[in-house]
Every structure is written in C-alpha cells, then in structure tokens.
Amino acid sequence: MKYAYYPGCSLEKTQRGYDESVREVFKALGQELVEIDDWNCCGATVYMSVKETVSLAVSARNLALAEKMGLDILAPCSSCFTVLSKTNRILDEVPDMRKDVSEALAEGGLSYGGTTRVRHPLDVLMNDLGIEPIRAQLRTNLNGLKIAPYYGCQIVRPDKSWDDHENPVLLDRLFRACGGDIVYFPMKVRCCGGMLMTTFEETALKLNKELLACAGENGAEVIVTTCPLCHINLEAYQDKINRVYGTSFSLPVLYFTQLLGIALGLPARDIGLDSSFIPLGEKITSLAEAAYV
Amino acid sequence: MAHPTVSLPGLMTHSEAELRQVFLKQVEAIPAGERIKRCIQCGTCTGSCPVSYAMDISPRQLIALFRAGEMEAIMKSRTIWICASCYACSTRCPSGIKITDIIYALKRTAMEKQKKSQAPQVQTLARLFVSNLMRYGRLHEGTLIREYYTKTGITKLFGFFPLVKKMYTTKRLALFPKKIKAHKSLSHIIRKAQEIEMRHLPEPLPYSPEYVGYKGLGDLALESRKGE
Image 1 (cartoon, each protein chain N blue to C red):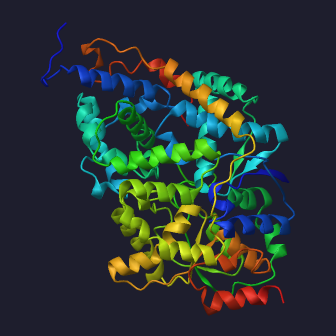
Image 2 (image 1 turned 90 degrees about the vertical axis):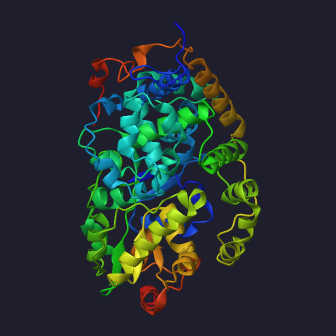
Image 3 (image 1 turned 30 degrees about the horizontal axis):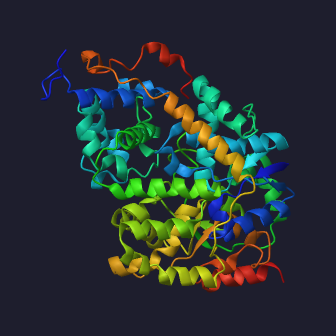
C-alpha cells in the first residue's frame, strides 16, 4: 500500500528517531510512503483552544493536499493523528463548519471533498498488514526483552478507535510476536501530561514519575511509545524527575517503530537509535548489533 | 429589563448571560455537544482525570456550575487550563458527554472574553504557538520555548541548556525555523478563516432568563447528529 506521509513538526528534527524508523520499517515491510509536499503544522491541540474555524482550516489544508495525491494520510505523531482525524470528523458531521472551512481553503486555492482517511502506523501495521507478514520479515528475536508498552492518550481516544480505549493490545501483540516479554503495565493509557510539562511542570513531572515507577517496578527494560510528546516527557525529563523526586530512573524510551526496526534487523543508525538521550543498555545494544551482521 | 447585578437564584447577571451565550455557541459546533444536557453528576469524569487532584473545581462540578448559571466561577478556575486533553473522561462518561471538547469550548470562551485567568501561562503558550505557526507554517519548537520562557520567566530558560546540549549532540536540534513554500497561500487561508470567525460572533443579546439551565442550548433536534 501507498500512503501520504505526514511527519509533523516534531518528527522533522527533535524526534528524528521516530521519523527515520517509520520510514525504514515501512520500506522493509514493502509499504510505500510519499511525503506530502509542503505540509503545514496540524495546529496541535493548542490551536483548538484559540479559534475553531482557523484551527480546522489550518489542519484541513493537509487533508486537502493528501486528497490531491489520492492517498490516505499516515500520521505517526499521536497529536497530529488526533487533530487531523478530529478535523475530518467535524467537517463530516457539522455542515456549517464544512462550508466555512471550504470557503477559507478556497482562498488558498485548495478544496477538500472529505475523502482523505487519517491513519496511524500502528493501526496500518497491525490491522491492514497483519502480524503474519511482519513475522515473516523478523530477523532478530527480541529474546525476552522486558517491554512496557505505553500507548498514551491520543491514539486510543477520543473517538471510536482501532484498539481498545482502556486496555489496548496492539503493541503487546506486536512485540510478543517479536519475542519480547510484555511486562504488567496497568498505566499503559494513562496521560503523560503532554504540554503541561511547559505550563504546569510540577503536575507533569508527577505524572511521568508515576509512569516511570510503574514500568520500572514491573521490571521493564525499555518503554515503547507512539507519541513524540510522551516520548520527550518520559525521556528528556528523566533527569529532572530524578532530581525532584530523589529517584534514580535510567529507563530507555524507544519509539515502537525503533524497536520493531531492531527486530526487523535494520541498522541502528538508520532507525535513529543514536538519537537516544538515555543509554540503551547492554541488552538492547547487543540486540541492535546482532541485527545486521 | 434592568440587568441584575447580584447573583439571585434563577437570575443571571449580564456578564453571566453573555458568557453563557458565547459558550453555547461553541458547544453547538461540537459533534454531540448537546449531550452536556444528559449529565447525571456521577463523577466518573473526575475519577478518571489524571490531573483532577490539582484542579480547584472538578470536571463534574464544572458541569454543575454551568447548569446553575455560574459561568464566572468556571472562568476564574484553573481547572480548564490544567486539562491536558487526554480524553479519559470523554470515553468513560456514561452519558456520552464530550467533556474534553466542552473544556476546549470553555477555554475558547475565556480567551474570547479575555477573562483574567489563574493560569495565564497557558494562554501565553497558546498565543505564541499560533503566532509561530503563522510566521512559518510549521512549528519551530526552539523558537516557541525561547519565546515562552522569555515571557513567563527567563531564569527557567537557562535550565534548558543541558537539554539543548543533548539535543545538539544527538543531532536533534533545528537551529533556525524554516518557512513552508506555500506560506502565502496558508496566510490567505488563515486570514479568511479569521474573517469567517468574526462573521459568526453572536450578536450580544440583552439579558434574558432564557439562558438559565439548559435553555439556549437548542432543541433535541440536535440529537439527531451522528454522535458515535
């Protein structure tokens, strides 16, 4: 299958590990990604709190560009995924909004007929491609690596989703098939606080400390994420959490496509493993090295 | 009719009625937004919220206050600004109320009416985010963070040096923002959308007891909209 790839602002640079690994994993599994030319920021959730028509028009520009390509959008960032899906849904269900947004888009020489579907890589890999074709491509057994699968909020909520709201299982299934050991992780859909790390730091630090503690106490050797915001909160703020709470977490955080890339035998450099802030530890490093020799 | 200036049971002050009108206009644009009428005050939202412990008014109380015509109290709370929009409440609400979207509508109401808030930094961040997007078409995180801390507390900015260094050494730092090619066309879209938004601003209504309770929220006809 072919998708209109929408990396989103975070993946462009600060979260290059996600971008690189999504591209490589999709290539390895025979899926084609064509980046949407000149895409713009989806507006993220912040924009929704300012002006509705504007936020919908900004995000709909991307939907319109993808429609011109005749492809469905693949959006790895959970926030982009939710915002683009939500825009689609509002345009579909509120005719007045559709009219207004069309009028605004026309001003930029674009139109949107409402046919673009927005997809998340986890959904595509597990529900379209399926676990068997992935299993056939596996090169490295994850060898019982203890994994805490962290889904976060925005891919399992708010709308009717392709995985369960309360107890999603797609990451669990994926990595079990790769030979990983999924640890008990009841906080798998608990919020990381998102942008609160900037606006209400104390609260966000507490949320993330709880997540790290839950994963750590259950023996996780790595947390896998699906969202740049979860990722940066859990990874970049571990130091600060340790300072504030007197803890000593040193838990690597990887994007699910990075860990899948290791299992698929992709070179560490190609899937951005060198962009991690936290030492990956002996086990993951040796798995990654074993992968492509 | 003279505007009552004190809070009397069943009556609303002028500013309350105005806030309510702006808010209800926002709710209309939410798919299944009218379900706010179905609240049974069970508190599942509050129990599901990962940050309710840090709120001054719980999500359940928010709806109760709205129903009682106490919009001013809601606007003054820090609750609406601390919502991280994780949607846990929305998916669990037994009445199918889109609480997260309702909170967005409250944020927009507060920003539109320029209400003094207990958490001005959230509005600062939102405004800077928007201006960043308008300038470049894409978000440049470095610029956003720099501008945000310049406005809210410059000393904190220095705390970011270790992180910036790490970003640099792992090649994750984009030093300069980049404009999208079709920046002009995007600006046209944004300008038009803003214009449309202004067009839809509700005519300020004179005070009317109509706005107490759920009145003013439209009729049940709205219910026919696809919910989920």
